[in-house]
Image 1: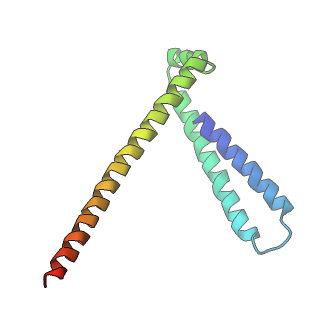
Image 2: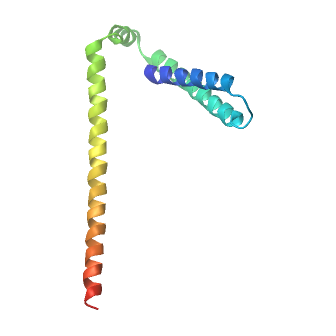
Image 3: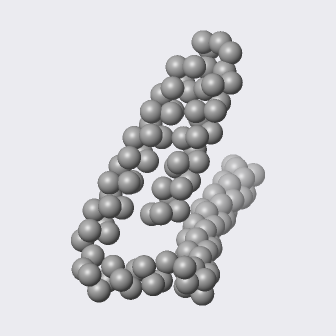
Length: 117
């Protein structure tokens, strides 16, 4: 959640800079709407992060503080997230390939039977 918060804050800053550099009304309303959405998302995430941290007990909060800078844990979590994304992409690709093979098979059979009619 903290990395998401940092990403959202960076996005808000970029949108604010783009709004300052904008010279014209054509894209201003769209940019203002996107900026408002980004700010609202950042605020919701800030509230959710604070609530989650408050729900932790004293011992869990101390453990969290101790683990924040742990590089091994960060690499381990990044590897787990990457593994999960790769696995989900592989499953999606498997089902997409099966659909394509079925469509190809139906097309070939349709062409085969139309040749004999």
